[in-house]
Image (tube, rainbow, N blue to C red; front, side, top):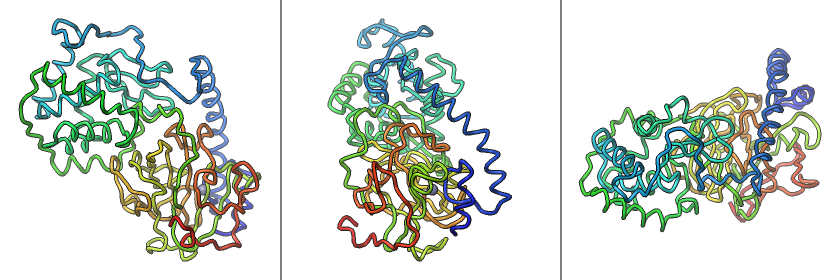
Length: 430
Ligand SMILES: [Zn+2]
């Protein structure tokens, strides 16, 4: 990464890293001259929606209080076998048993989580309309679009769950194999709802009690025979997964109170600032670039480490971030690590639990970057970094306890410093 390239780039509304060569720069600028107005318009629209829906906290969608808006509403006391809700649950139980060979315990967990998420109501939508259905899938906009054009019927939604459990979210199914009730709840919540184990949204005591009741009332007392082929398991890798309601229902996590480490180890420079590349100048840059001193495309000294315990929620590629991985940290904040040399260089997979300090990825220069580095971003609100819309993106300097504070003149603004070598190993937290 050289300084000339960085100065060249300041005219464009680039997002990540530096731009290589004027030809690429022109293409990049022309792409973004279209994308930026769209992004701004989208942002304004989102803001309006949030204001209109009137949340007391603009970022807090109450997904646990489902509202019904027509369609195939299901109702009645789920314990009453004549109610539509009870019949819907029975249908799902039968499907999970016959098509996935889940155990009674597995099914009790899945149904109890459906009750928690929506009251087991196919017509349940959250106030903003961004999540929908029994298991509250993302329905476009802020929250990804797992729901797609699924028919909003019981059959459609149970079918979607089964499809996901055998493809993109197969880890939930494979971890349910031979699992007891607690293990089944963990498997579904972590790998299907993409919640961390200790997330309060799990309402674990209540959900467990519900599952016990579900198991009794529906007579779910049979063993399972889940058989997930290896080829299916590998389908779960590398699939962008920004769907379930849990991705957005973060109300109070904020970006303080973490004891995070840094995403790199050893000697490093800060080569890109926040919220603009040159701190308060240059193009918009919703993150900070870390570059280790002995950076290479393959060497261990360029490993990238998770700054927190968490769960991998996205592992994919786009033109801005290149190969990137997003981890939902245990405090609910999403952490983004961009520009890995390849998908293989990201050594964790969607659904996987990671520990703070665990090797997860590698510095590289895929996407919009010339130098080998990791682009690190934090997002306390939404799992949406593409291409780093401002909503929710906060300063890495505020989030990372051991960020070199001399680079932070005010309120999270980060000035890059190519001339100073910092040493992560001197930080007490590393
Ligand atoms: Zn960057």
